[in-house]
Structures are given as structure tokens and as C-alpha cells.
Image (cartoon, rainbow, N blue to C red; front, side, top):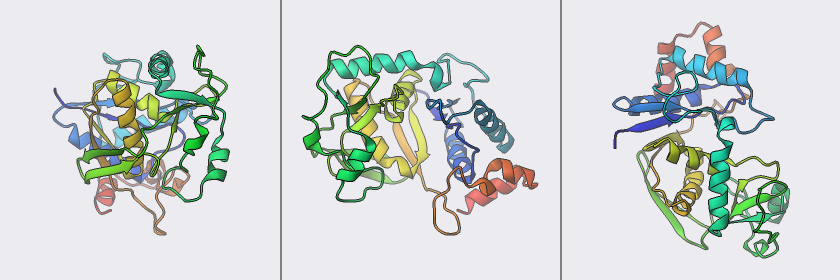
Length: 275
């Protein structure tokens, strides 16, 4: 198969230097293949069309080009997740029918209150709550509750990362049963990106190292949907002067702010190359 990579901004704010570093890496790794731009705008409360437009403009300014996307079209359109809901519903039904997921009335706050130890992503869902969950598996639609993926107890999920080498996460230690569809009737990131990467034929996913545990979760979804996962390449996180990883609230380091200060694309690329 020819190389197919993707960049997938979430339009909840302006892109910062961390996004620039990851997306530039994805662009370089796709130099001999195809790069897809996908807008991950699932959350209608936080995602804004103006941020999607700003992301594409800033990426073009930086010198990143893609061959498929919302502006160019392509064989796997639409390239906005908000327009791909039927694909996610079809995957939800497959997972439900296969017994991989179950409806759950427990909230994130409930899980946090029950946790005895901190975790890098989120507290581990208590395994004893599985049997206490709603057993309405005959539901035709996923709304009004969270749907969780039932992870294989204590299985070690291993994958080879293109930068970090072998990575391992253990189910029920590093992560527990995770949400694939939330009570607001929105498909979760874990489900949507797997469905889209399968449908779009993505051969390698380039993203930040904060998503290593997400990769382990997603490998389980690939397996349940009887699809092989792509290769993975997790980039180091860029941090500010205090050692905190960058977030979209860091407007001073957004590409838009740097552009307004007179920075050139070359200066931005030199900055991220030093980090």
C-alpha cells in the first residue's frame, strides 16, 4: 500500500507551536505519499468553524500541503467529522452487536471519586461497576447514557512506535473500560478516529505522545471491528518555560499570534526544530 498519513486539527482554538511541530512531522513523513486533512469537529459546543478555517490558513502559511481535505475534496469525503455521523453509528451497532460495549450510567465524576491512584489520562473505571451498569443492550440508539468498551482484563496491549520503539499498556491497570459514545449523543474521539482512519485508508498516524494510552484503547477497537491498525509515530510534547505542555489557551504561542508579531514560517520551523 502507498503511504497515507493525516493531520486532524480539532477546531476548539488556534493552533500553537506544539500542533505545528506534530503536523510538520506528519507532512514530512507523507512526502512520498498522500496527506489527508480531517477536521475533528465532533463537539458542537466547543468546535467553531472559524477555528477550522484559521487552522487550514495557518498550516498553509507554514508550508504544509495536503492532497485531500475539506477544501480540496477527495474520494473519502466528507472530511469533517460532524458530517460523518452515520459511519460512527454503524460502528457503534457493530460493537454493540458483538458484545464489546455496554451502556453505563456512571459519570466521569463518579469514576474520579472512586479512583485511588492518579493516572496520566483519566482514572480507571472500576471493573465491579460493569455488572451494575444498565443492561439494555437491545437499544437501537446510543443516546441518554455513556457507552463503554469492555477491555480485556489485564491484557498487555503492545505496539511498535516509529519513534519510541515498543510501547506497552495494560488493561485495568493503565486504562479501564472507556467511553465510545457519550450521554450527549456524541461519538467519542476513540471511536471516531478509528472509524475514519479505517475508512480513509490511513497507513500511519502521527500525533503527540500524550495519546499513547489512547493508541492502546484504539487498537482494541480496531480488533473488534476486524481491521488492522495503522503504524504509529508519537511526537514529543512541546512545553513552555515552566515545563507545562502547551494548550490552546496559550495564545501567546499560537501560530496566529506569532504571525501577527512578524514571525516568518522559517522562524517557526527553526523554533520547533530546537525543541
